[in-house]
Amino acid sequence: QVQLVESGGGLVQAGGSLRLSCAASGRTFSSYAMGWFRQAPGKEREFVASIKWSDGTTSYADSVKGRFTISRDNAKNTVYLQMNSLKPEDTAVYYCAAKLIITVRYGYWGQGTQVTVSS
Image (cartoon, rainbow, N blue to C red; front, side, top):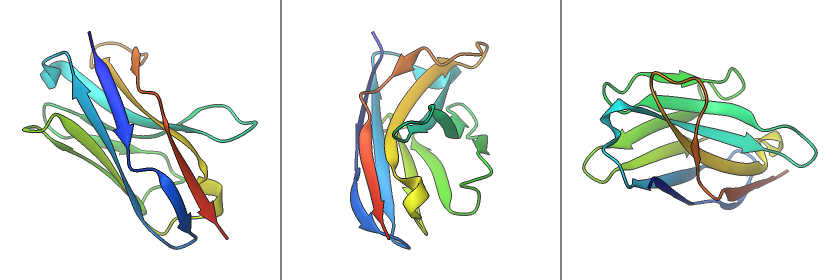
């Protein structure tokens, strides 16, 4: 059973930084892609970034390119989202997700962690 546990959220001022972590367990993840998504109040959940566990290929939403960096630590089975130059519009609940590379939809989700950016 796949388990994803996020941590690292909090309150930060605009221009600041946070690093989110997602600890994954229950599988060998070499055939998986890991993603970060976010959902702001009253808005739909949106894609933020993803990484293939096998080769580290990354993808980013245009809104976070150049500010956020997704990475993984194979030894710790942990995926990170380094968020720099944070803006108030980055305020949301951030979710970690996992899927087999060959599938379209992310089938496994964490519980989410709140990120609040004050102006």
